[in-house]
Length: 361
Ligand SMILES: *Cc1c(COP(=O)(O)O)cnc(C)c1O
Image 1 (cartoon, rainbow, N blue to C red):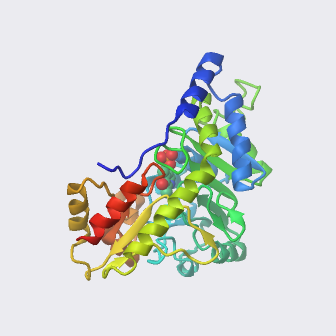
Image 2: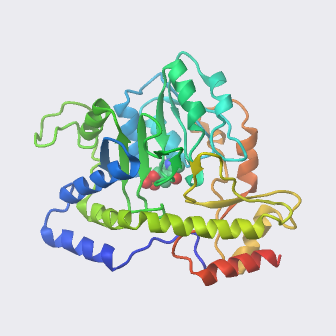
Image 3: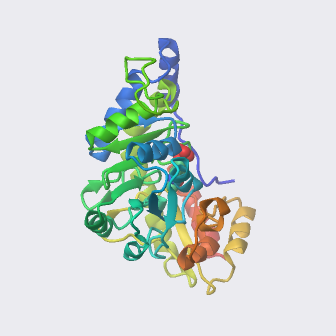
């Protein structure tokens, strides 16, 4: 079976972990600091705070930004549950705005109509590895004095114009989960240029205690600390980020060249001013195609190609997110998208096999 995702674990990662274990300092030490420094470089921000998941990064960012009960956060329903769960965790409410079908990201032209006196922030997701429409989103945020919190869990290394993902809003939230473009097993990162958010985030990840001042609880907090074991893996992965990204982009290019002319298949659109890092390569299957999306998935599975649906049910359909309104495009996408393997572990033979299997349907 060709898997939909597969972490790249080489001798570098293994040796780095062994070194940390032998050092005896395994929690939030030098390696974690080194990883934070590397992320300020990747994202181009002044600060980065490492935490132990992308979900923790979102929760910490929302808390650090002062978002709480009674506040509303505008986001897209076409995302992983972590986005909306984090909003709920600080006691705020997700206000969903539909996506555009050419990007699967929040439709910036519909954001303004969702703004109320309670709106505090816009939380766009850079789905599949491509930035949302930040020029429009930044204009709206400025006009209405809203914060932008970026869910950059899928978009490490991507860009909008010259600015890197993680630096497209007031706070960026990245994930280093095992299947992400770079990973450390479980991990996350908050990026910002704002000293106050940076300080609050650092307190929040460690029970409100200042570094070097244990048992002095200055603020609310949790245990969101990253281990140096994980950070050491992350450091090795960062070294390979640009190589990984180019491989993903070149596989994606090959797929699109092969599938562009297949009736009923819409290949991913790279929007202007954006660098797509192809966390996922996601096609849209229309009625014109010979098989339905689900039949296509089953067919590929029988040919030993694992695919996945990100995401089968938009978040507005779950009671806990308490959302009114219809989200036509998100609903359509949930029925019709299919992601093919695009990770750097694929060999040229795998890629050619996937293409020829697909073209023979
Ligand atoms: C992976 C992901 C998260 C959460 O990251 P974890 O590290 O798994 O907690 C949040 N948002 C999106 C869009 C993701 O893909």
